[in-house]
Image (cartoon, rainbow, N blue to C red):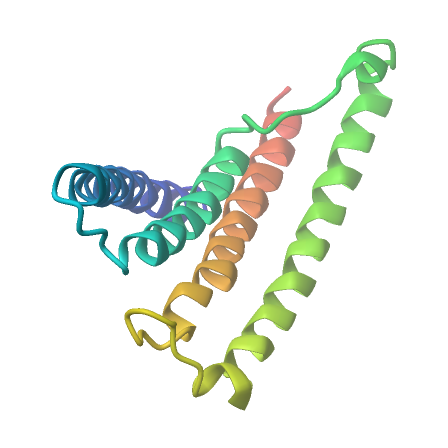
Length: 159
């Protein structure tokens, strides 16, 4: 599972860099067209929003992989080690269950007829493409979380 998580994170890092570069280029070009050429690009805002959505879900997944999400740990510092480990495992299980529920509902949402025929305003892009960031990012996050949970038990067994 660790190899799968590592492979996905490698793809996510590359994709995040590409998407951020594309967003920077689109926004820079949009500024040039709007203020220097006096001819704003109608599609730049829509594209930048879609790119930001994809970057957010990929970044959130990577945050779970590397355990870099924001957290308040003051209570955990005063709890004994065995209780801290138990709370950490329970937290991981709850997060995993929550992600699985969200994945289920997001896939049902994308497969619904209302989304299947919906198109974006400016580009006329099928909306399932930008919406796919939700189940894909959550699926990657669940894989990373499950891998971290397995690693947690492996470290516990080796000690």
